[in-house]
Image: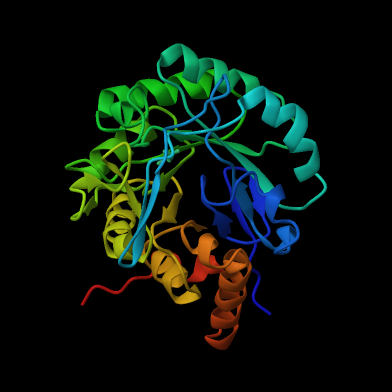
Length: 304
Ligand code: SIN
């Protein structure tokens, strides 16, 4: 039997298949629809220091092979999460990754500090890549100096391992990955959504109230795979692959490209059990091909 567990930055995950921030609530909403104990980790919806209402609707639009969103990081705030939601999640084996967000250095510091010493939060994922907010988010993720600065701030403020979630909306994602690695990131996750839009040709109005949103889903998988491959080659910290992963075959591609784990995002909207099914498929693939664990296939791409 192949062993699906992975150990990254000192944390043991039951499987390398996690759920991506913003696509699986806080995890607990799904306890009736899937087995949370069979999911490696939940990256919770982006948390800010104060509650946030997000952007006005419409803020979701389905596209061919994907989805546009401009949620605007709606969330109840980090303190509410820790006090009211985290105790429920702690009943399960699923590891909890607090995705955090700020509009300036001080907010990133404050929200990271709130996670310090909190039992049941296993890592922090820093969102420097949200395309849907006017302040913060992408502004920090498109500049290597700013990305490094935020990484340093969060590393100093929390005692949790720090994963930095990178934006694909840059010329050279490797440059940003290297900058956050140098600043002390324990891992990077790639990629967040690609900026996109859609227009109603009858009304000539944009489909999203915010006009521009983030594109996710199978449409972005080849772009994400390419970026994960490039980052994994150029850095020595774990790369968590995200972007249109819908089947176990997609996940295996990311691992062969160099990912140490993967996050399932838009696929959760089609099947809340997607992460469990994908993990099952990877396990079968490993066993059928004589591998003991995912380490044996990680980064094993053969370039002719
Ligand atoms: C959102 O809440 O707007 C999406 C989060 C993100 O893309 O980082």
